[in-house]
Image (cartoon, rainbow, N blue to C red; front, side, top):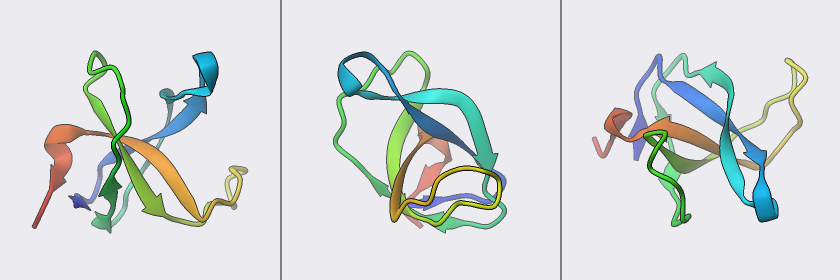
Length: 80
């Protein structure tokens, strides 16, 4: 799957029973990115779907992760 440039990528946070949830914090993709959708059970109330991306984040105080789960609006994902 691809994420379009200028898309908000909402960070994950741990919630009840150690499930991941979208947080209010986000970063913005400055270029188109590749991602994988993941088969999480999640609430569709917020309109976001979980995606996995290989990234390295660190300069802004976030921790390094080989793969990170972000939350993206489903209508902003494409297969092209």
